[in-house]
Length: 479
Image 1: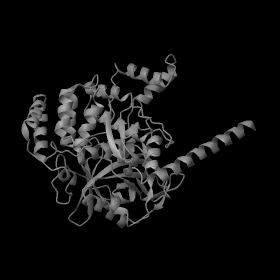
Image 2: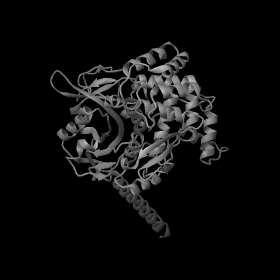
Image 3: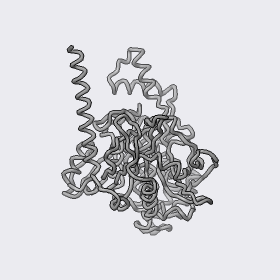
Image 4: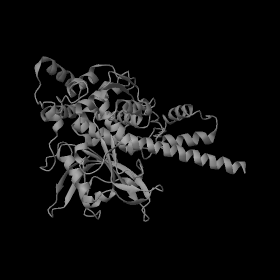
């Protein structure tokens, strides 16, 4: 993991209502709005070929008795629409894709979901159907929490109050607990963007994750190369310990991780099984986003309240850039680079840019042209350039309009519509705070500094500032 543009503050990325967009085409003035859809498999000459399928030998036909039997068993458990989606996944090469940590295919993992026991309250047919729907079209992934039905509200409140040692006999603490668990706008935009990217680029690994975290074990095992975290093995071990990810060393080069959702995610997932409304998260979304939030928040996320703690973040929502990059590196087992484009001061005010817009554009296009999605964090500022919101979306492709203007094709997990959206480069580039890019795209442009170094620096600064504030407060009280 690397960081570029180290003069910039690592802003916290989550979502509030002001950051929502519609599934529309937006030009630089935010006018001339037209619907646009790239729902299942966008056919556009400017959308790059996905090399992850080629790397795992694209196959569109079942081979041998075992694969045919697995396909038949899965099909028996599906409704008409899911059968159609499964068939289209076979034709497109998704179903037999084997780009996973253990080389299992999407078909292998769907079969396990269909026939093996699931965690209590997670029916096989529901998890199977939801996983197929997501892999058929990852745009259905959303970060929208479901509203809690009245009959479940006391259960959720009691659980939350028990976890936080709150007095359940007092009215005010109970009202505060109710407010905290009735989440209107979630802070899981980073997690849901990583979920989308995993489903799009590594469908077999996505299905393997779902199979593990929806099983009675409620966990998935993953082996990673330590070099994909830092250049030094001991530094990688320090990072894993700092993020409190359960692991054991396979050897000096690899680590075996155990990744799990938080303990309350299963409650949210069960609720979505029986009470899911349109445009709300599926049970699979709940479990996946919780698992990813746990990785990034040092195992401190709570699905009941959407609140996280952790040592690297002063705020209780979302993930900062450092945490996001660590999570991406773990999930994809790749050395991800976080490129910071904006300069933000200690008061969270945008004061400039680390590079020019042409360089930003070139780097993003080069990443897209080699088959990578680009997860970006963008911001909104007020009239005085103070940051008022941050949000994470994914750039999946690009095109040029009739006037030759560059248009980015994006996915937003917070727009309530399961389609792609388009932003003109002129509109989007000035808003991008950071982007996750392959090392080869930026290594000639800037001096790369390992992201964990900047993360540790920020952590120490935060600790020192907090200690100074406490000392000042104590001195005032003593006086």
